[in-house]
Amino acid sequence: NAGVMQNPRHLVRRRGQEARLRCSPMKGHSHVYWYRQLPEEGLKFMVYLQKENIIDESGMPKERFSAEFPKEGPSILRIQQVVRGDSAAYFCASSPTASSETQYFGPGTRLLVL
Amino acid sequence: GQQVMQIPQYQHVQEGEDFTTYCNSSTTLSNIQWYKQRPGGHPVFLIQLVKSGEVKKQKRLTFQFGEAKKNSSLHITATQTTDVGTYFCAGYSGAGSYQLTFGKGTKLSVIP
Image (cartoon, rainbow over all chains, first blue to last red; front, side):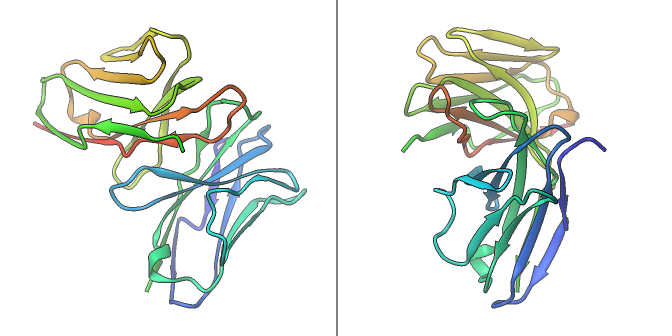
């Protein structure tokens, strides 16, 4: 499967636990974007990363959220001490270059915080 | 910041009727993209429009980009049950921009 891969597809956490969401971009893509989608809403930009660099994290909450895209391995979105309001679908997208390129989305991780 | 608005939020049509969703941006866009998301699915890229006044067709789908590059529309002719889903427009605010701003989407239901 040459598409964007995300895992897990579904994640259940209790309040206060940590959530780790993984994203492997399409082959040949070095630009990764994370979006959050609340029910009945559009997607909201969170963060844009290239390998080993965070380029823009202006859409990410200042606390509890972090993202990385290491030299080897998938990009990871980490949410510490989850709260019920973090329940949402988190989508990763990738593109071959930046600058107004088409972004291809993964299947998403549905996070439910109990 | 940039805002992208879509109307209507919901649309119910009889199978065979036409459907149109409209997208308006608060700022001029370098390009606009349309995505379709099925219930429980992920956004799937449909098309990108770049030029002012551009019109593109994909079978029963017609996409338009306004002359001022601030609005766009998606028209589906003779809807089918397979068209069910939410249609999102998303735009980049300027050349070199990488932040896609999404509208809230139009959720289409098709009654057989």
